[in-house]
Amino acid sequence: MDYDVTIIGAGLGGLACGAFLASRGLQVAIFEKRAKAGGCCISFARKGFTFDLSVQSIGGCREGGRVWRLLNELGLWEKIEFLPLDPAREYYFPDLKVRQYADLNSHMEYLCCLFPHEREGIRELYRIYQCIAEEIDRFPHTLSWFNPASFVREFPLTFQYRDKTLHEVLEALIKDPRLRIILGVRSSYALLPPSKLSIIAMASLEMSYLQGGVAVVKGRMEALPQLLVKGIKDKGGVIHTRKEVKRLLVDCLLYTSPSPRD
Image (cartoon, rainbow, N blue to C red; front, side, top):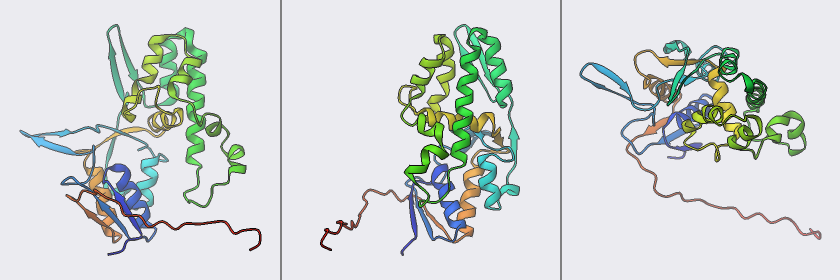
C-alpha cells in the first residue's frame, strides 16, 4: 500500500508527527521494531506497582504549552489527565542539593539565592533561553516558509546562536564551575554532553519545563503514547509493530539547471 508519509520509529516524536500529519488528512504509516509503541515512554507493572521505564515527567502540559497545543488540536486533551509537579526535579551533588522549579521566575530566583555572585549571568542565560524558545514557537509549520533573507530579521537570536553549544554559552556567562555543572545537568536528557548539545535545543528543553509546566500522567506515562496511537488510528493511520526497517530504497531525480541557450 502507498502512504503519503512513512515514519520509522514509534517513540513520542514519531507518534506526535504521525498524529499531526494524520489530522491534516494524510495517509500515515509508522513502523516500530519493538512490540509496542512509545519508545522510552513505556510502563510496566510488578507486584501491584506501576513503573515508568524512562520518561517520568514531561514538559509543556500547562495550557498554552506544546503538549497542550498538540493534544488540544487533535481533540485529545480531555482524554488524559496530567498531574502538575513543582518542584519538578531535585539533583543531589556531594555538597549540595538543587531543586528545579516549574516556574521560570521562581527557578531563577532560587538559583540566584544559591549563587548570588552569578545573578547577572543566570538572568542573561534564561533571557536567552526564553527568547530562543519564543522564536521556535513562531516557526511556521510548513516546508515552504523558509526564506534565508528574512530569517535573521524574524528569528534573530536563533540565528545568532545557531552554531553555539551549551558549554560555550555557560563558559561565557557563568564563572562558578559548580553552577556550570548544575545548569548543564539536564543536557543528559538530550543524551549529549554540554560540549555537544546545541544551545537552541537546550533552550527548547528548559523552557518546556519552566514555561510550559511539568507534569506526570495520572496512572502511567504510557497513557500518553497510547493516546497518540489511538488518535492516529482514528484518522486512518496505521502502526506496524515488530517491523524493523533495515533498508531504505530511494528513487532520486537528478536535476540539472538549464543551459543559457535554453
